[in-house]
Image (cartoon, rainbow, N blue to C red; front, side, top):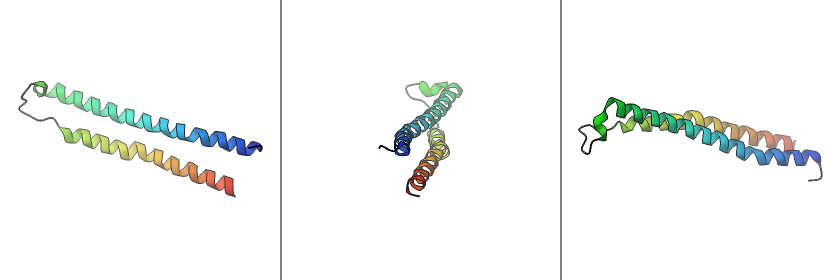
Length: 95
C-alpha cells in the first residue's frame, strides 16, 4: 500500500466493477427499450389485443428473440472486457 504503483492498481481495480455494472445496465436498458417498442408496435397493429377476450395472441416469440439476441450481442462484450481486464491485471501484477 505504500508503493505508488500498488495504490494506483488498487484504485483501478476498485473502479473496474463499477464500469462493468454501468455497461451491463446500459445493455439491459437498450434491450428493454427494444422490447417496449416491439410491444407498442404490436398494440398499434392489433388494437383488439387490449380487449378482455382477444381473438389473437400477442407475438411473445418476438420479445423473447429480442431479449436473447441482445444478451448475446451486448452482454458478450461485457464478458469479454471482464476477461481482458482481469488477465491484463494478472499479467501486470505478476510479471
